[in-house]
Image (cartoon, rainbow over all chains, first blue to last red; front, side):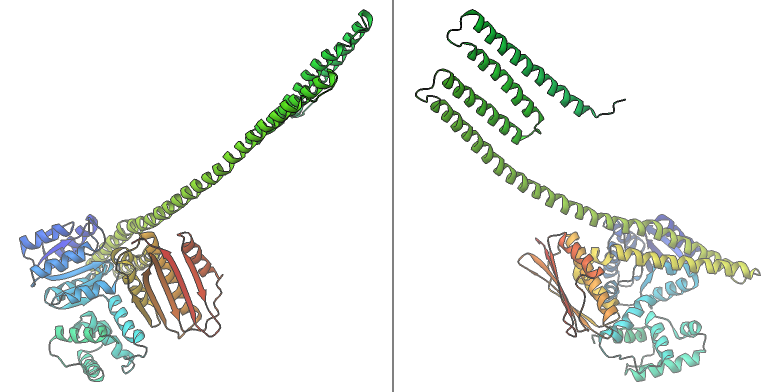
Length: 219
Length: 346
């Protein structure tokens, strides 16, 4: 896997680079701003770009815009956005950019090395990695915003599984997180799809999309 | 030992000079009268000497009064009046001493009065418009400096938020990452206690990051700076545990200071609804009409909000500092509407 990083904070950038290299992930180039990201994506054609939302010169959402722009010119590029804040509007913009291989995580998740590497591999492999805070907001939206709780039909366990699916986890990942067997997860997943009347899907990625589109659907 | 304050001593000193002056005048007056009586006893000329002496005493008294007056326009005015009165008295005295007859002092006294009246009117007229002009200038300066101060405050808050983001938060993230790497190396190691310590340290760092994030979001929400009021209100609505609808008709972005006041009106109002009316829902409406930004937060809760309550009065002063207005309509059981109007030349 070939990765580029756009992060203006040297300490963080070097930390992420070291962390990835320790785990045999190749970091081919680094940038400090949006222009730099565009340059290194064009030059190195990486598999994955890890991008900080806030970059110079504007320090607003420069990184997000640069990542979306880079993806438009290189649709095969997977993008993992790191942010100090969870903003649903950024999630929506990232997901609206479409395609596979999208991640949006709070920056502090890099501290959980195992979880972070899992997300990096998943996104680079065309999967999805949404921060649990993002998913929590989506779920809250769906339950609070509509006035009546559409997720009421699910058991608490099924809700947990739904949230983990929305984060982009695989059945194996969900089983590990909930400390249950893979078979139990499969059963929960099929129950959820039946109860919410979602189209059954074989691939993990399409499953995530189905769950997300359900959660993001206007009440 | 005398500890009298110096001003009193000075006054006493002047009073004593005046007394000496009067004493000398009286002595001189008596002396010329004696001389007159001893020499000719004809036409009573000492009266002219008395007049002269009287004038010097009167001048001295006037001078002392003028000196004690506080400085300023009114002091000059009073001194002018005293001198006029003195001149008129001298003229009348001369008329009386020359044996009366046709009252010729009428002319100079009227002239003096007229001159004084002109002076007074002139001074008065200059004073009033001057005061008004000063006031207008002052209001102008105050308005400008106040809005400057508020702008500076808004900019300062955003700077603090950015400093937190680039400073403490970034360092904590780096720390948590280093701890995470240490944790990874210690995993499966025989020293389970060290592994557990590092794991706990990393969780502490995560908690600190989360707290700092909430704190800086409260200071200056990044989505407000990045995407404006409409998006920030949407974000508040999403984060609220009750159903909130946002209707935003904003096209241009108001000044940052206005934007942030409006944001806090929405944030505080929604917090109040959640706190006081569980189970309610709310609608936020944002629009611009005649260069005024209108922020209206309406809920279907139990109403009866105290317009002078801590949160609301804080909001009011924030809005009024920008020359805006905030009204609260909250009949019992009739829901609450908070309506803020802010100037926005966008």
